[in-house]
Image (cartoon, rainbow, N blue to C red; front, side, top):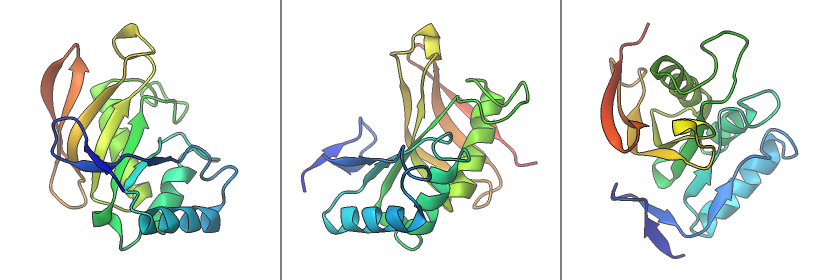
Length: 166
């Protein structure tokens, strides 16, 4: 398998990745496990999902977390935030509050203490085509006392967001 750098983060990802948008919908839990383990056998280490994928929302992340139990250090997981995940006014968007809440929920569903890449899609900087990716590890409140993440909030400027668990 050919590997490439994920931006300037120093993380190597397989040239072929697995898009996980059908996991938890058309692909059931056993199918997800079979696909992911075959991908690992072939040297694929990059899996792209989103908090909204699956039925109900988040099923893709839950199935990935279950399938990759014990294999987490071998893979690079990217997920997306911004999507509507509930009925509340803070359950959607690119606010700091929503991003950190979405990251915590994704970490629980993925059964991991870190996500390698967070993508902010559709609507960042008022342009649906612009995507922002925090190319670094985001740590969970379960593993540490706080989440510290560098996220690209505005036009190329890096800001540090820190969140203490509730």
